[in-house]
Amino acid sequence: MASLNIYAVLIVLYLFCATQINGRKIGDERDELELNYLCLKNEKLAKIQFYAQDVIGGPNATVHEVARAAVSTDALLSFGKVFVIDDVITVGPSADTEALGKAQGIMTSADMETVMMAMSYNIVFTSGEYNGSVLSVAGRNEVAEERRRLAVVGGTGVFRFARGYAVVSTYSTAVAEDSGVYTVLEYAIYSTFCP
Image 1 (spheres, rainbow, N blue to C red):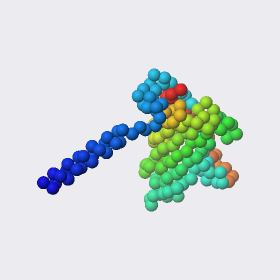
Image 2 (image 1 turned 90 degrees about the vertical axis):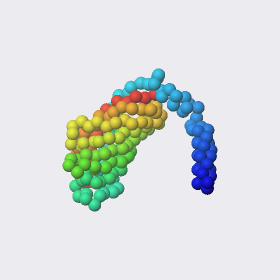
Image 3 (image 1 turned 30 degrees about the horizontal axis):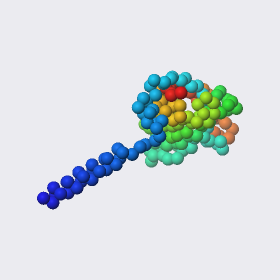
Image 4 (image 1 turned 135 degrees about the vertical axis):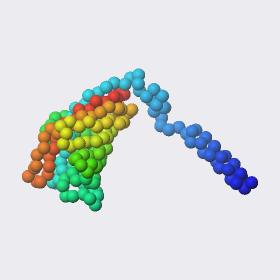
């Protein structure tokens, strides 16, 4: 009989909690409207091209190693290394061209047989047409491949409910005098957005 009472109390408690959670509003009225329509009626496709200024090592590094597995070697992209990135993105391949924002996130060397980075990062636009918006990108980046494709998995601002893909290629690589490896990555992103 005592176990029956415990089950009755648990059921009542569950029902009470469930009604409290469902009764709360999350976000504002506009968010709820967008959830209902998922922006499908006004959805547009954007092709966005830019360049990421990627610097590994040296005083101006934008990529930093933050962890490594016990099996990692000293090779730059050895299996088990984890990096954080904070690359400037620009309109053209030169670092002197107009800055559009940043590519910020993490990448992990996650393949024991080839140079491959598992990546999760945000493209944060701080100027231009998409100022204040963010695209979230994730996927497998086989660095040695000429063209790599990663998934656009979401976003904020005009990119809320975004989906699509990014094509990444290495535009140029150079070793600087300050011992940094300077790489320019070319991006072509095809993504839906809500104007």
